[in-house]
Image 1: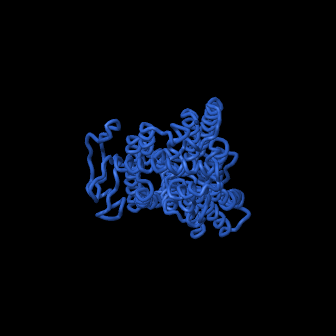
Image 2 (image 1 turned 90 degrees about the vertical axis):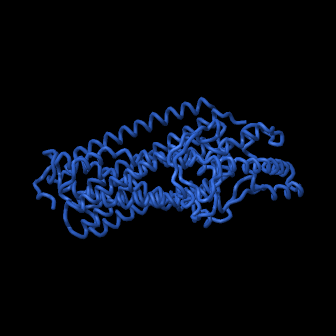
Length: 526
């Protein structure tokens, strides 16, 4: 059997590389559409300040994009190096959207980003705007296909297990593509990225306004970020409701952990705001909730109940017991493919095969599983409640804080685009890390909440890993963390350098902090 240490290190390595990568992705998703907005205004009005805004913010976008690509490539290779059995077991389904992402989206955005930077003097204004739009479409298509793959891991539709090949096989590509969980995940994730891009531009613009430098440039950037950010954060909140609904439909254990819902509550269930969680006693010592809200969000009805953790565990115990029968029948089929009785038994119980595999963590032959082993497997089916509960609430709290900030920024812009309260500008500056923290917490809740599964209710995590040595994992983990930390330092250095230089880094002669060798006389931006 695979050691727990090997599984934990494999998970930690993938989590570390994914979380580093996700520091760059949201900003890429958000800033690219702001570039489209700015360049569209430039094409419409002909005012050179909008072109300068597109070029300057595009420069910061380009730095972030390059490092996002660098950190993202490693993730796909890890499926072959660290998660070999996972790749064998579900590669036919999971690999399809990743391949399409590379062929359709990555090549598109990579080509367009080159034309974006080097095509200003070679393309007409409409042609360059089209390039910027296609660049934005490419980045979002990339996110779409990756999230379709991830959404299938959360809700594995359009596929079934074949005892002949001993793998999952795709039965409907369209079911995978239009998976409701994947679609909700996509719109929620890209909206969070849009919010990140808007906060980035809003915060840096606020710093310029506080310093009273490049004011005409900064106030326009501030206005675009305020409007775009308000629309984006509202989308995040509304679409988060839809994501919650899909979680209720497909992942009861995740939702119950997020809500610290130990017992099934009468419908419609209340939304727990705060609670004192006792995981050992499997109860809440006290809790504060809002009546009806969770029931309405999770079921869209007043009568449908949301199962609690104790009820979920009871049902999972039954599925594990049936899963033992499925695994035993499957092993008989592996030995004798023509065993009609084993085939009939397997077809009857195969929907619970994954639950039988949970026992492989404790015993090689699941038919020898003891009641104590079954108890451990049952407890494994629900993630740590406190981590899920508080991670989700901090994420939501940050979302509403950003909603308040963008709302005040948008109101201030409508009231007077030339002057904003210093407190608002300082608040925007201090809120700069908020969307990244919210995005990382969202990733944590989604992925940690899926445990103990890599493919929900199909393939347990402990069966998915490659047979590597613990020492090699320690070495590669240290290498990745060191290299990615260096990339993060490079990103922050370059971002801070060009943010401090401001639009003067364009060398147009229209802005402050321009080097003498690059500046040329030019009229002030209008």
